[in-house]
Image (cartoon, rainbow, N blue to C red; front, side):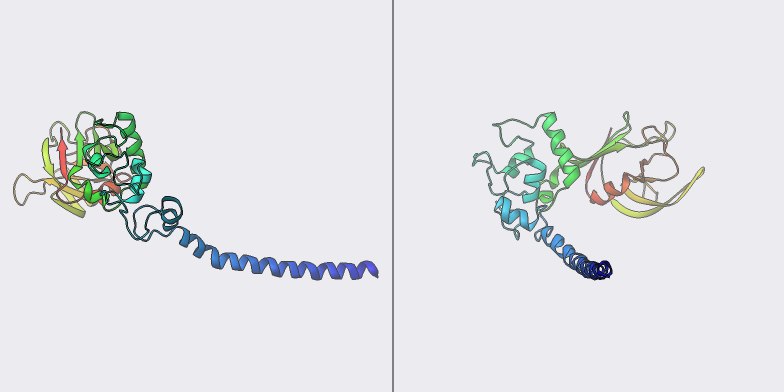
Length: 262
């Protein structure tokens, strides 16, 4: 009889524990997303959370460029390894950190360009974190897309700060890709490419860079879904990019961006 009473009591306790546990789970489910969202809030969209700005870097979460050097606070920290609260990180008042970065100079050294290793580190950080305003405006004159015909490779970014690099397919010997300096003339989400021996419809992510005569289709950098021969010539003159790589380039590219093909 005593054992039965203890069993009943234990059962009731388990029920109470179960209700308490369920209530705790409910509270966590309701409030954890809000707590997480608050900790990830980036009011000024500079690449640093409000919490990081207030508690770690002592900057203003409402000012994307707290020190006024032309670089977003988050980009200074995450990409270039600089202080977001000092306009002249090295103490050289002649030039701001933004001036150094535009020129490709190492902020921590006197009159010294970034070495290849440091550039590789910055490019890796850039590809991981991206850039924010006003950094993108500050570096706007450095925007470029470069295509190496021999290596069948495309690189894009801001000067020596690489945002992306991947293999492409340019024109075959009978249908070569034009070489020289061009610009992005138009961005078109879908284009139909139709010729005597090809018919590729609804091709995504198209950047027009050269048109020989008005009314002609012209030459584009565009996605290619019909082959996987990237790294080798394969096109009728356009620059073919995989559907994996082209969306990022298309999103990044702006009308007027310089294109160098050589």
